Image 1 (tube, rainbow, N blue to C red):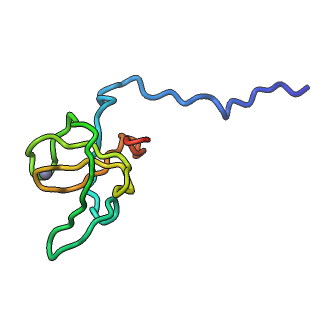
Image 2 (image 1 turned 180 degrees about the vertical axis):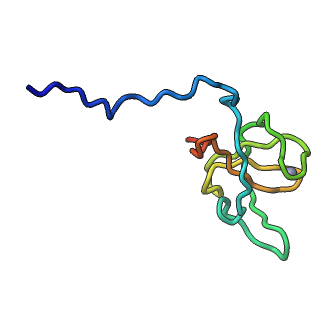
Image 3 (image 1 turned 180 degrees about the horizontal axis):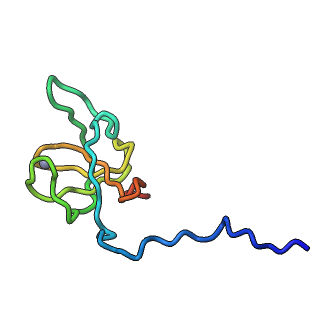
Length: 104
Ligand SMILES: [Zn+2]
């Protein structure tokens, strides 16, 4: 008699304590050269024809100015990321469990 009582595949239930806003994003600064194809000058890194796809609710964690722009993958963009127009930094967005939040 083999009763299928193996529960090892039981669904994991997240804790009932929902303190964390599900939309909360963790921003990690990225090396622009890792996400965008551009040309490096002495102390800046430029790429042209990059289209932003919207403005995020999040503001830049570095300079605090303005809202981050969503940049999806396109000709000169290898990785979807968030971009600050004020300080031209690039950020990756991750969920609390470390999975990328920008999924295409
Ligand atoms: Zn900034």
